Amino acid sequence: MDEVDVIVERFRELARGECDSLLTFLPIFEEAVTIPGTSTLVRTHFLAHDANGVPATDSLAGVMANAAVDFCIPRAKAAQAYADYEKTKSTEAIISLNEQARDLFVESESSGEGGELLLFLLLERVLQRPQLISKMALKTNPQVHVHGSDGIHGGLADDGVLDLYWGESKLYHSSSDAFKDCFESIAPYLLPDGTDRRKQDLLLVRDHLNVPQPELVSYLLEYFDETNPKTLKVRWNGVCLVGFDLDNYPNIAALDEAQKEDLSKMVRRWHNTIGSRVNEFKIITVNIDLFCIPMPSVADLRAHVLKRIGVK
Image (cartoon, rainbow, N blue to C red; front, top):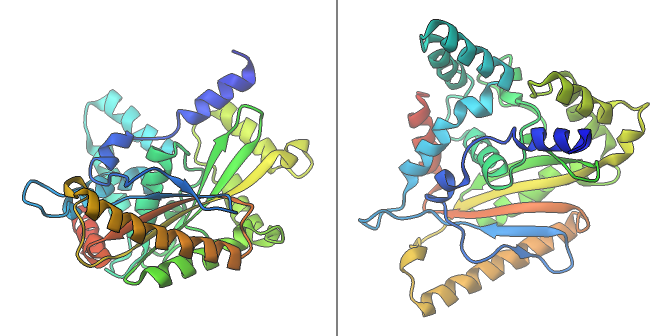
């Protein structure tokens, strides 16, 4: 294994958590579909149901809340806390990370941070794309939302290309509003003329790269040096989470064939909407992963997540 292969492998290992611990409560419905005429890949997920037939909103909220430290706290700071535990055998420093993460969330049930947290989990656990910057950790006022995109993650390809993934999450009551606003928000980062918008985020990544290994940091920073030829080997990508309320919420594990077909028809209508929006915002050639997640109530999920995290 040569040096590049080692670097690529170390970078992939930065992705945190197990996919199954998330998808147990958020199983996929049918196979992922690429929208015709675009480079947008759509995965549709529904909440699982418990043995009583109740959607597992609180269970999903628990998985999300348990990832709050990973989402909010830079890896190096978490590593320091675990090193302190090894030294002192006290969990004090580790427990304090939970408090620090909790205090970064906006105290509002209308906050979009729950969607950002779920998007983070999908990126790290399903797509295996490590977080490059913890924007929550850069907050100077906990009651103000972070600016710019909802997350920046990365992937190192075997051919030396650095894939950057701009994230956008929208959890709305209305599906049409969620799809429209999601693509409207992410398009400026993905268009060919989006240099200024990307540059603002890339400066933050360069100065606050959430990577603990010095040799990996040095390797990645070459992609952000405008004098280095590696800047030509950076590819822009998008990852979107669109969640919305759905009446008569289905238990996909208990559907008969006719019910599955009816649900498939509904999913295809969402696909058509996605295709229209991707064309409208002129991002048909950009690689986009979109997670489409109908919910019994996005407001209930937000409330459960905040309660689980301990935000009043």
